[in-house]
Length: 393
Ligand SMILES: Cc1ncc(COP(=O)(O)O)c(C=O)c1O
Image 1 (tube, rainbow, N blue to C red):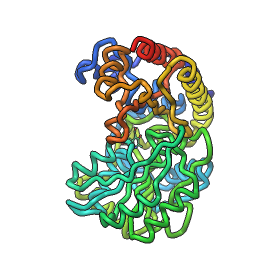
Image 2 (cartoon, rainbow, N blue to C red):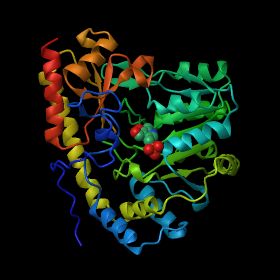
Image 3 (cartoon, protein in one colour):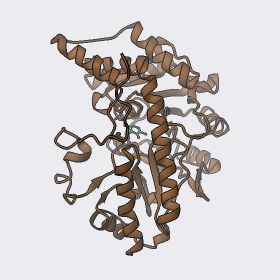
Image 4 (cartoon, helix red, strand yellow):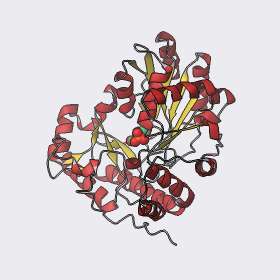
């Protein structure tokens, strides 16, 4: 059998498919003809091997309580070893219905109500939500932008940990939305601070397979001491466009941290997960390699296309260097518009549904996040709409 889903130019109709991105335009008060480029899933069909594995399973007609054993783990480990040079142990693995769910469980497991939890804004907004919604306090050591790349302010990072008595840090690696692949030096520097101050590090590495420059390093792999303080969050959901399958693989090497995390899952009433997510994960990691490579080449070209287009046709807009993820972070501050006015013009003028930078933290004001994992014709249309906005301002 051959991989069938390699035509990434093909526009797949996602309307009326129970699709969050396309079918909730009206419900979320967007204009009807808006082009949605916000939520982080891809407009591509997944690997045909995943499709076939799911169809075969559905054909069995039995959907009772399900669980996987060592062969599942071995498949996941093989992917991690081949793509990230890391070999986790089977006992470290805890499966959850999503990475955001795991972040919420970690907040509950490792902190008390009222405690401060550290993040690095601008960052994927559910980081703030799981902290706030669990009655903890958000403390951000903001990343700073120099030229077209974001950096960590290490002094501020340690100062905040000391001042706020931080016990938990949510790391986004690689970083959504600023597109950084953290270098081993950067990760070691923050990791050492965390070890020194007894901080647990939840490293959300869900975008680890979308690396376009540099190399991804699993936080726990960098030092033995880091293994002891880490919760490593992974999932096939971004890589293979399986977000609706609600499955993530969380690795917690330290037994005490693992037990605390498991206790929170028990308290939340979670035990087994849905069978289809497990089947999809195994199929993707074991047979989706060709699709993954082809998809990466396509997305890489989309990023290059975006970069070129922004440079040539969007005066006042700059693309932050995108080393990772399929989410481009566009700096609109050169247009000199107030954030609310910029948001308004993007939605009602350009008719684009992006993620406004302000939802990633106050320091995201003036930026917009655009998802470029779509057929090039769709991306080209979105960029054309932005061009009109820049020219007609
Ligand atoms: C950094 C990051 N973490 C987690 C998620 C979502 O993960 P899940 O759907 O598994 O909760 C996303 C999706 O955009 C993300 O960008």
